[in-house]
Image 1 (tube, rainbow, N blue to C red):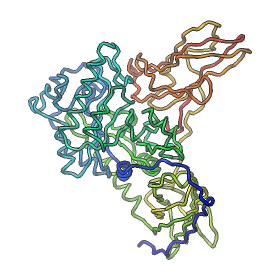
Image 2 (cartoon, rainbow, N blue to C red):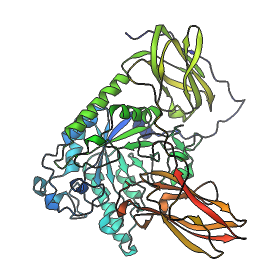
Image 3 (spheres, rainbow, N blue to C red):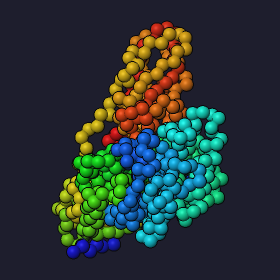
Image 4 (cartoon, rainbow, N blue to C red):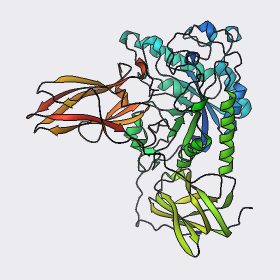
Length: 562
């Protein structure tokens, strides 16, 4: 039986001074507030590569063999609802260019496969199912297309400049078809950003949609595909970083002028986005999924958990069971509520009618004012003494703090740093339903030398150097690369640093670091063992003022399981 609680005690935050104006902070739009409230959505990846057992379509499967005869979009919606997802985000076109709606822009589409005698429309069926189940629908159309020489990481830039204008029109028509024929599309995904101008298309046909990456972004990538939001989880950035279209978690800033929240995408199958045979051992455990939930939804973001229909078009039953069990675990997380309160100020006390064992708390601040809370602690009262149970910097839309079970008479939330008067919408205590947080084994986050460069000893003349980073970028994520001097009295000058994905320059995915000769690299596409999985780094170097020898080294950009 939940314990009763007395009215909250709260202490008002003192004003910073007469007439003091708080600095501008990013605040969410109404659309972003609604996006936060979803908390979870389901990615759905189906592609010709599903029939190939690959992560990228190599166009080796004849269209006559692509026949998902048992495809059931009602089942897809049931999967999403079973773990609490409020939206399905469907990959309607991946890198190979195959379209799951009867587009008029290419013959490489659902019109030309045996399924429903070429009269089927997967996107159309899914849109109808989502409406019946009360789910929102988002659409992913890869900005590039292998058929046009706009490969992974290209953002839609064709290798042959002569094809660019024609491909621009193709992509614009594809988005126009999708946005005008299937009802409201709530979210648009531009994986790795987009160089094709779609401004008028989006303004005309999807003015209220959330946009993931690209020049019109209202959402951003955290910088990993582990499903984990970096901590502190500030959901705002500087406007200049937002405008880049490729902002990630490392650019988070509580004083940033633009609210650009993070959407945490992660596969159900270890690090595999498309179905393949004999992949059940790769299913994430419920415990792992709950850790991810508490570090995504529980850090104020939205979790985007993937689903992989097989070649029949159905999500395998083993996956359905895992979704259902995950949903039950989420329900258990909130089942043992011992009390809840709210208030305005820097301190809230929640007193319980009798001592109770507490394992976690849920805290929410009013983010309509932006990130006001900058640091907080949670304490428990036992035998007349307050003891610290948890604490962090960011609070945001929702914060789940787990700790070792503690029997307490009361709990206290203390805001120890704030940019304004905090408004706490919820301070709730729970017992049971989740294990205390156990840090993962330490990840390899130290600097590692980049093979292929060795000791870098440039001459006083400009020279181009390049190295394959595939061995040190084993999966998508954000990485930091720098060149450091190891000997010599001269200095190093560099120019033209660029990242290459599958042999194609991807300048949008590399930005200068805060120090000289340092860069932030972003691998947003899946890493595979073939040519498409290759990542390389190229730049021009020369020495100035004497001998110079150095080392090129790299490390993951965030410690979240990269």
